[in-house]
Image 1 (cartoon, helix red, strand yellow):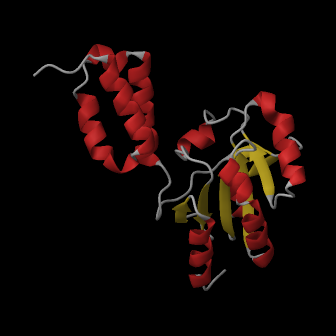
Image 2 (cartoon, rainbow, N blue to C red; image 1 turned 180 degrees about the horizontal axis):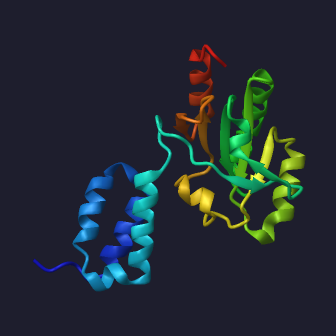
Length: 198
């Protein structure tokens, strides 16, 4: 049986994978049905990379991948430096309405858990928006370390964590295992209520 060589098939498969990750097994099967020429194309390689990101993304129960990113002052901040503490990763952007609307709730949570929970913001920003990102951090008095790859959603960390919606929150335990992955801070708050060693 020959494979599909229609570019629409590849395009649809790629975007289904971005937004409907739970069907990974089906997407892997379908990707193997693409012709070798389509698989070797630039978009075919993008699909293969996206499959790899989804396959290895940090889900609940998995270890969060290590990273080091620059903060608003250009100082490198490593996730490993927070080992031994609970960490809330906040993937957001200055342009993201739901992210901005959630800031008061995020700040309240950070204040409530001060000293027990570290907050790390990872902003999906282009290099040309660096000033707007820094302004948003200041004007919203955002808690914790505020980092960005300045590659919008194409940075290695954003891709490795397979972030396709904003905001996305990950709660990591003391050893860096993902306890919650969600778009709703209420899920983080509920989980923190159950934590005995926070």
